[in-house]
Image (cartoon, rainbow, N blue to C red; front, side, top):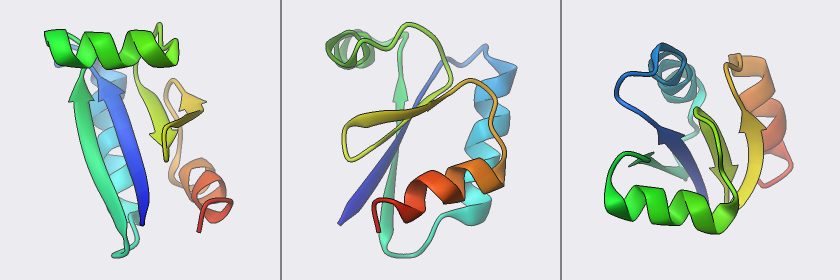
Amino acid sequence: MTLIELYYSDICMNCHYVRSQIIEVLPEDVMFKEINVTSSEGAERAKQLGIEEVPTITINGEVVLIGRVEKDEILEELEEFL
């Protein structure tokens, strides 16, 4: 099963925007997980992946999109993993 993860911070407005874009286009057969980089666990996971800014989207553990992105960009990346 495909897993899309959003690395975010609570105070990041672009993170909230990207979250809404993901939810609008998320296929039923794709799992979605949000990881807050301000938590110790989230910070450690982000560090392991080399994530230095939010929002960052990973698909199956691979960083694919960084920053404010639109639905079509998310769908384009998802297609490569489905």
